Amino acid sequence: MFDAIIVGGGPAGLSAALTLGRALRPALLIDSGEYRNSRAADMHNVLTRDGMAPQEFRAIAHSQLEAYATVQTRSVAVDHGKHLPGGEGFELSLGDGTTVQTRRLVIATGLADDLPPIEGMQELWGRGVYHCPYCHGYETRDTTIAVLSGDPMMIELALHLRRFSSDVVLCTNGDDIDSTAMSRLSHQEIAVRGERVVRLEPGTKGLERVVFESGASLNRQSMFAMSQYRQRSDLAAQLGCDLLPDGCVAVDDFQVTSVPGVYAAGDMAHRTSLPMPTPFVVTATASGTIAAISADKNLVATDTAFRPA
Image 1 (cartoon, rainbow, N blue to C red):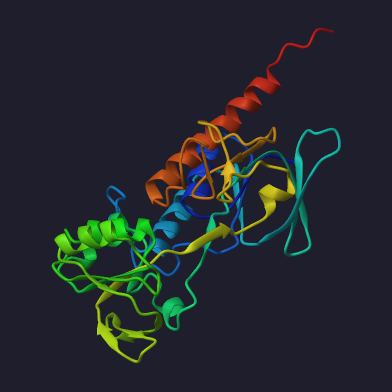
Image 2 (tube, helix red, strand yellow):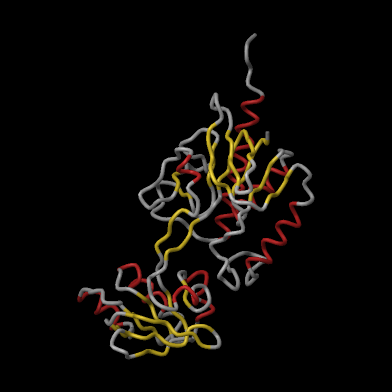
């Protein structure tokens, strides 16, 4: 039996595995090979790694984990998880037909994005169509930008992106927006197109054209759009972890879930005080470290507890 198993090989899971290795804990990192940022060409706001490709980041992390003899890695998906009899530990059934057992479990399986049902969106996601101005805004500076949806959050994003470009167009995709929002957009010289968007056409460097239901089109070099996210794995739900209204796993300040012995890290989990997950590599790595430390300290407390004869 492992002291800890980490499920998920993104920044949060890799960070947790590193921390547990340095704590001399027998640990297993299970990596399905599915990552939320797999479509992105590079990642940003990561000090000393700004602009690095996600796959290069993961390769470096794996090479550094090799220095810690107590850490094993398996490339396989987790099919199911359950509590062991007596409540001390967990058993995971893996996609290759094997099972593994652990005393503590760190879940870092991440989120998956359900994209707007627009032709070309899937192909251009992360490579011309983006979701975060802090991750991709700098790279779209001085380009022609479209923002999809009349949702209030996207209206705010259009106003935000005006700092990066003098040519920002809000494509409401048929959504109605109120007069106050229209005035704010007009004051910032942001044009509004109300037609439904039916297709995104790629060019040699990413997005080239937004095509509307009427057949009219708009030349754009980049677009910002909003996805609907969901848990990539239902492992946390299988084990009975409390979920927040947005579908993320509820954790406290130390990444502890509602289930004793289970910790969650990365964008799949957040505190109840936060309105949404924070989809950044740096926050994911930090939460993975905190989750691993919490698990280690809990094991120390369990193993050193005084039990009168």
